[in-house]
Length: 344
Ligand SMILES: Cc1ncc(COP(=O)(O)O)c(C=O)c1O
Image (cartoon, rainbow, N blue to C red; front, side):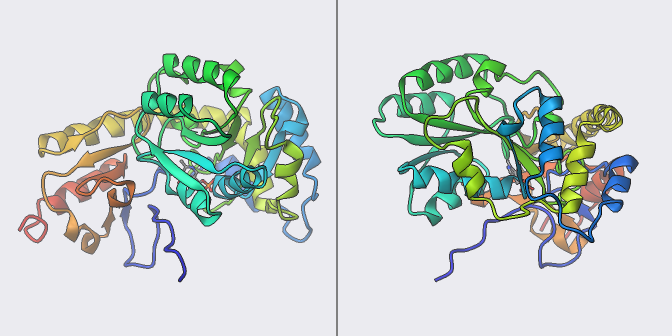
């Protein structure tokens, strides 16, 4: 039997979505320069299969060796590839955040690996201390779906533990560019010991462009950059993907992103306040999405063109994940919530 597909926010095979609170993509869309760069991408020829110019450019901006930058067809592809690489090197135990992005677990299960959830940093550290064999540990910082961030003390303890145990750590940085409050708690020296997944398509509101990159650790005794590279199909990244990644670190793009974080902070605060007034329990979040327990049924929202992300597949029935949206969409949500069919 085919395993069920992972559940995701965003478009699906259901009725049209006018107000999409279910996706974590930046609702402010993409800056013109990036859209133009994508339109100008040369689709008539294959990209360089080695992506040499792109890797060198990213390496220079990121201040790492070009050999450590691996283009991906987005982090979903990277998750499968790194899990396969770990499995081929004999890893059987995979630790995934719970609640967390479902692809970490499904990638492990598809390869017959043992996937276990860790509810928080302390639980993970305790489990890793008790573990003997090699393990693959997924961490999402800041975390989807919780919008939460692990404290500096956790990262210091994990770095210490990693010195003593055969632990391969992968940091999913999908939402770091959308961090609205506080600072990245991961020390650079520790990040350099981890595999890091970067997928700018969310911050750019361009999730249809399937492109990202992995930064490999400075040293990796187990997976090996060459092994991870060898598992990629040829031309893993499209011409549009190359254009997006080349535009991502440009000063104009980053200035646009900084401005859009200011707007998202305001939208998030207004949305949270209004939902709290309606009796919803909204969890704190450092990014423009959050987990919330509605005070009323939300089953009828889709008929109003509104989609929230049901959190049942995250192990949280009765909860939803919703992203901050523009004031007009917020009004549509509040109007629909006040509608009789939704509040029987
Ligand atoms: C935490 C996390 N990682 C990875 C991905 C997948 O990213 P990509 O579009 O780069 O495949 C998502 C998409 O929602 C995500 O939320």
